[in-house]
Image (tube, rainbow, N blue to C red; front, side):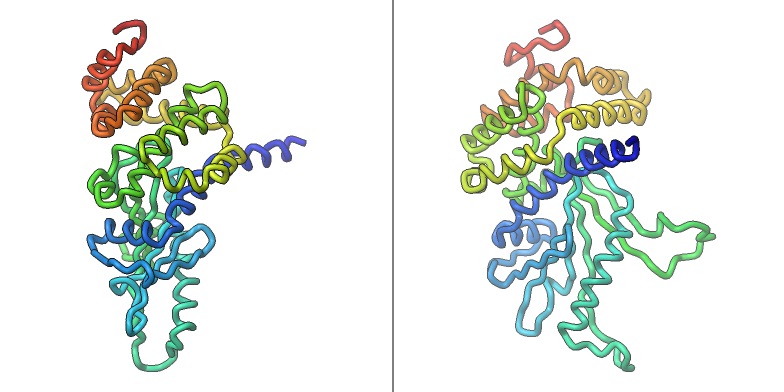
Length: 320
């Protein structure tokens, strides 16, 4: 009986992570939006979405762009994956994914790998889009070699590097500037998070979040078309108790990691549960006013956050 209960809890954790993963894949299932994302990451200017071919490999997006000689985009093999939790094992997963993708590429192009002539392969590029609640930098590299034991300073014969990009709202602003869809997705997830904390039920939170974003022209076309599907997806995979527990655990971990760097930041992390309602109220006010730059500024500057709280007349810990 105890074993069965443990399995159920794991299932809730998995579902709680996957609603955003599934939603992200839905949003970027459109060729135009996916091409815009590719251009923003690679600083390219491809214009024809019809030349972009998308294949799904389990939870991974695989982009290829065919030209006259069937090269992939810019001579690269691109794997994109969304993650709602930090996972240092992504490079190992990348090895599995890339081996399957290249196996298919070799077969599709009739490459002779047993001949003396060297085959030409597209260069792999692996991007992980992260939007979990745990604090992470804008960008970081995860390497397969960090998993190896007993290397004795000898370079391993195998390496895989995943570039993890933090797509939580307020992060990677330059990337968001060049990919409107990604920025809108980030705003929508932030809006859902805030309303879930302030509304009595997840259903009410989703209704308000979707209405707010449609009114503010944030993923408006997508949410109008897929409203029922998005709502059902989140309701069937979201666990509010687990989400709140995760937030508290992340807050405690952030407080331990930051240590004595600043007492103010540490106090904010430790008191997050007590001030969450007021900060949620501020976020919603800024979203309704379309003051996205102020929202980004407040997320990084506590003094500016206090100034905005005072502007909107929101009391924080009993003071104005």
